[in-house]
Image (cartoon, rainbow over all chains, first blue to last red; front, side):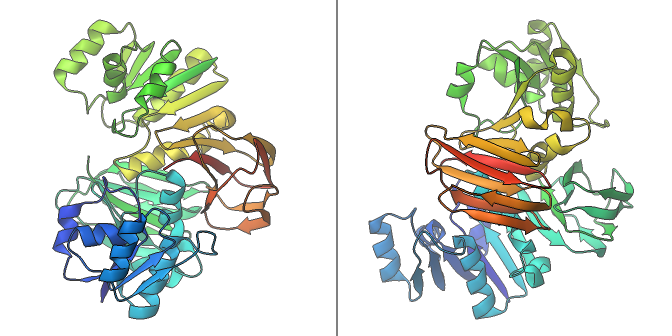
Length: 214
Length: 214
């Protein structure tokens, strides 16, 4: 099953109309993300976080509206987003986790969210995590050979080695690449699909693929 | 000297009032960033890019207003941002480069900008590059021991190893860390200064320090 996790980033980059298309699925609200879900008429199955960006009125409303809400102290061993994803995994053993509200605003939190799937706790789920905002869809890949599909409305395609990488090959994209190694992270941005399905492969490292639009 | 480079990201995250405080300094406009500078009453010493996000009327105005404008084809060996920073280095040998307009919108372009200082072409300037938006100030560090200063209005402090890191130590921050190694990138977010000056050190890798606010 698919679990959607709405984390507490700024609201502007969240594609509300796309969220509404997922409204009947399973949602977990993280921190202020739980309040946003209620505002959009979606009742999450669980809410979790320190709720330090949720005012007392909103928090009271969450407690009244939800069966399952867990409030942590602000100084804790895990970030709110980590706790949200851990809840998704523990309660639902999902085969797909979509993270919303993870971008924009504070870059330290955005990078914490972007890098989360590589952590020991989440690595087994790396291949089934997707991060979505208005302009971007991000997926994560371990070494292998993959086919990727064009997404309507998303003109650009990017390959980003989040770790050192070896053997990155883009055989059939608009701007191909053969057997590229890099000890530093690099974003091959603004590439394009040449057909409905394109391919890539690499030997070591973690690569994020980003479908994006202006 | 300091050179400011306005790149062509979305306008919302750009702190216009802070830009105005730098208006009498040297500016380079990259792609749509050149148009934004003119709009804000700042005439850049150079404009560069493929200008694919600049409409014909704006481009004509740029050509009339600026002494130095270089238009590249969209398919080229360097990104617009790379070309802008290369121009800053070649023409001014700056001891400080501030990059504006590098965040928000397309994540592939944001990550390309974030990772740029680690590339061979720019590595000698890594320590003098700062990336600024409304919520974040980012600086880059190579192995060593550093003192960092609190910035008024920026409550949060983060340490992000963009590459594998060894020996990361935060001796006197609110949440300390001792001799931490990691093969994957990780954002130690939401830390805090405990006084006007705090310290950190590490042995290998590249670490970004982010001062941020909500």
